[in-house]
Image 1 (tube, rainbow, N blue to C red):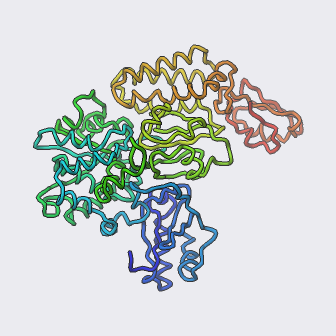
Image 2 (cartoon, rainbow, N blue to C red):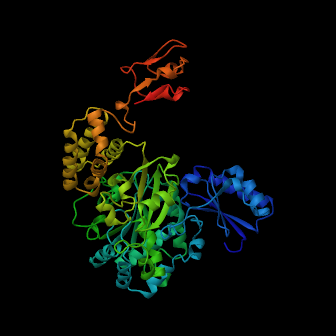
Image 3 (tube, rainbow, N blue to C red):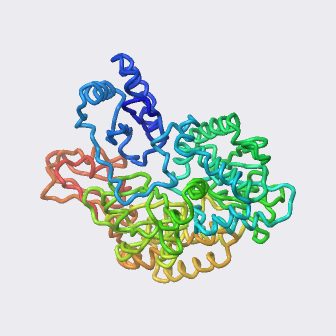
Length: 583
């Protein structure tokens, strides 16, 4: 890219593509061509910048100027003002809160064209593969990975190097390397963004894995709901083969390795490695008891090494920059960085990558920009539906694998959902249980039946029919499910229930004892009524009511019949005089 004076990097991730970023890129190219600036400026469609709620994002380098909420019709202004006149387009200007972030897994996302292998190579791409194949034995390479302290980024946090070593030591003429790209947590899009923005980093790492473990076959298991990631992976695999980084006799070293793709139907349980393997074999996506572990007996009964996308994205950098560089980042037991998807009631929704050991407070209130609308922070759910809700008392907890578990949550794959004072924590627990019940494979009774019973108890409480003993039932049943479920999905599914009871017991008590939802979320516990002194008899509320629950003549006070009211909120929304209130 160096021959151009300016580069206009246009976000080409899924979110921005939905906002017509492809049209914007074409409009920029058209305007540049029209003004005779094709030798001065280049438009590059990249992956995700991480600034998801600011899309479409355009970054101008070398000035490192960000433009946010850019529409296709803004292309002319950017070219005429910024490129020709050298003036920033102030109405689109955005200051990126990049403080405290360190990009390792996301190092190329938003910077390179993911469909151009040359741009990956220009940023030291495939350098690590060449180094490992020409200078290191498999044992030496695995030792380096173990010494780096890299832990699997898929949720469990098992040391990646030790996992590789287990596979290497198993005697077999055929072994498999698998990339788990089945990202199913609500609100999570870390792996998708890496594959869309930097697919070659995953391919390179898988080839290194194959050399270290003694495998010639790589498989990427990706959900079919990721069409853009699939498209860019296919392009990257084709290019890597053409350049000799995949296929037979890679770089003339005698090592052969190639990669194929397998598609999933979007089942959350297939994120668990044994269920994933069964799905790839054409069987039901159900987990099996371990041992044997996949490293010993996995795909087609052969030794199989499974790592997720983010784990792989770290590996080329570790081999290029070295163990000491990587180990300086993070904490003693959790090295490096972690990618999180910030979602919910936070101002800066999107992807971030931070050193492990940073606090929740720094992530939410500095990088995340605080709570939307100046509302009060209430809780953060880490680890997706398998994690737990943490509160204000946990905000200064350093984020790493062990601290989050000690606090009653978990790292998970990196989803982080922020909640404010308007969220009902009993309803939040019910939401996650609803997801888990839907996604359970049903193989084991504790998960299939136990989670259904948990959900029924939560529904009973939020409907105003809860009894005091229901809380003890929730706790006891949750512990049984955790202790007896077959796989990690079932073992962790009660976490949202246990953590919300622990941290928000008062809300459960209010639902049961007072028949009230303090946050005003649970419809069954809400009562709509009209404040007489504010009602002017305009009849707007009555006309909006779909069930005829509101009575009253024009210019007279209206009334809501609670027996007929379905609590849809239409009357409150339509009233212009603040006469309709909810309690």
